[in-house]
Length: 434
Ligand code: PMP
Ligand code: GLU
Image (cartoon, rainbow, N blue to C red; front, side, top):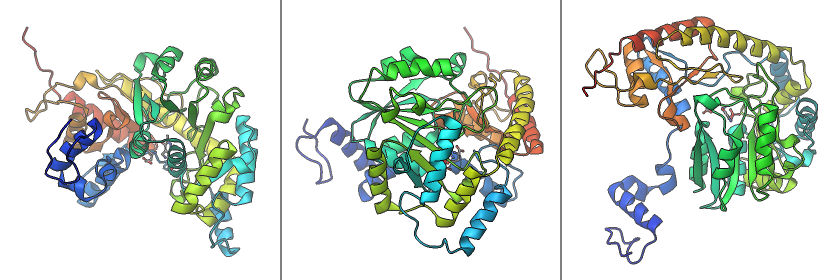
């Protein structure tokens, strides 16, 4: 195909991708000036909306946000004390790239004890948050054009990271009838000859759904048919599981070599700001991640790591107490959300999110006479009308839902649900003439 382009970089015979890029680039000078990939990357919606709430609050607006996936508890005392002691003991230097042996050993013991997973210390790489762990793995595995399968609703950053490596992502949509879980048949149909990676996240952000053991058995039977496909198992919400056991994919011997277990300290131990996560994987993948991390960020924070050792080896009662409090909030919130007419919601099995379907409100008219066109519009309206910030489902690959985090104190949650109810009740159905 011959394309004329104002930019001398593009002329002559171009591939389809270059043609598309050329058209976009000519209409967007930013993309020519800076990196094409970063310029076209979406901002993290979860972090972006939390930032917006902080800005509006600073301006004096009466705004609350049920947006962020961050426990509202402080890190337990014994973990903080261990990090303080580490500072006094001189843990102020560069840590080994993959993490201190004490932490990697504690992770090996934890994975065996809590998850039934068999790893050795040289299979563990500690990183600056599970986010970095995930990105390390994706960079280590994927070449441009390789296929990845995401199950929608999916956590926002998986898609962005796959975009950064120019993967070809296949999105499998799930719905409320299947509790937002993929069936073995859907998984089988989604895996194509070029598929290299499937990402699982149980308990799920944003739906809170968990795969049962029977469901996992059936999915693993499909994965066994595709020996060249790697599997990320993001287990960061494992400790916030209410009604059923958490199943780790790496416990299945038939796929063990291809599973990359990703976990971290942010959710289970209320350590979001400590920025620590880890992978457990084959030695080959661990070595690739170590090499990559050594060139990009080096070892994770030294004294945070000593806090993490205390978290893993210490008393779990604070983790259990936080989980019990999330459970109490879940049950209260569920009753209240169910009572709002038009809201379709399921009881989440884990994590700390509701993911209600608000499709009934799309197309309705606001008191100001505007029509709510889509879910982003609806979230903006709720924010403007009642000062309640929620994350629109578009961030998670769906068009009719919102994510509500209940990692907030009960009074804030009750205020939030009241604001939601008031804003939705004000919307006027529009008669469609036949
Ligand atoms: N995976 C999921 C599903 C998450 O919700 C998050 C957000 N915290 C992460 C990974 C990243 O966690 P971290 O804060 O350890 O980077
Ligand atoms: N994972 C959390 C969330 O989904 C924290 C924000 C982020 O890392 O994106 O809200």
